[in-house]
Image (tube, rainbow, N blue to C red):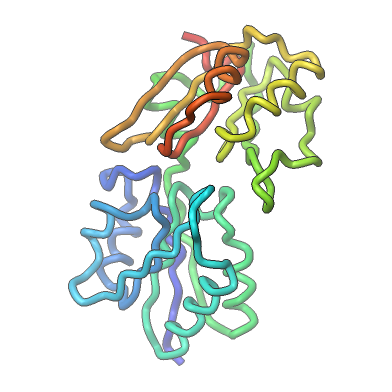
Amino acid sequence: MTGFVSFVGSGPGDPELLTLKAVDRLKRADAVLFDDLSSGPILGHARAGADLVGVGKRAGRASPRQHHVSRLLVEYAQIDQRVVRLKSGDSGLFGRLEEELIALREAGIPYEIIPGVPSAIAAAAAAGIPLTRRMTARRVQFVTGHDATGQLPEDANLPALADPTASTVVFMGKRTFPKLFDALCAHGLPPDTPALLAEDVSGPQQRLTRMSVADLALHLSGEMGEAPALILYGPLAEA
């Protein structure tokens, strides 16, 4: 068997943020299984004739089950195909990478992991702010805003998330942030803590909105829109 799988981090969406290695693997792939946020112009780097298969998951939308995605990776590799599993941001950040690696290992299929620009890094760069600030934010924490059921994780480390000296990035948190805000305030986070809502980072509809965590919770209690978003709060979000 000569099949091989490359897990490629596509970055936040701007094709110019792809690595050279990512572009090389796309140009040589027989099949590309891509997330929703990795579609569009990025797929223009795939070679002509490659199978392009959308397997993305988006909150509130019908999505392929994880076991189906893992099975597709195995089946393509077993017929000696070079496969790219294209994931948004970096594959290792809240991207269901581990389940797919397990499936490949059990099937004896070789693979590689190619890092991508994490969306959190791209959001901070777009806003013109550092993720860490000397003397005020020496720690960065990345957390997911929902668990497998779509709810706020019950095991969230709230004292750590309420630390006003930490830079915190919440992935997939628009729906659950109002509830998270209440919990953070109960653990001592000041309601006027600066926050940044980064939507469609590096995309054509990019929007960066600064406000306090209190105002952000109120804002997200209403119409949230469909744009993918990150929430950043703490010292990093100061103007």
